[in-house]
Length: 92
View (spheres, rainbow, N blue to C red):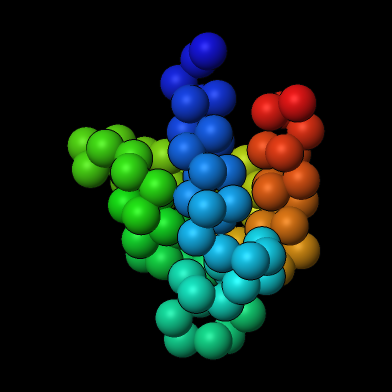
């Protein structure tokens, strides 16, 4: 399993074990309630998923780069849902 898969798996475990739904996870990490996750909020999610502090900044940038479809530098609910669906598909 590559590093990307390990990270995505940890995120899936966090969401599955600590939240009833992906919506609840999104709302929990969307601290300001604006419907979008900032890089800082994504870093918090990665910390909760037990991703090493050394690579959290890099990983958060890569997640935004990979899933930010509208190019605003943030992850909205639809982009988050797409990422979660992809993570779920990869774990099967």
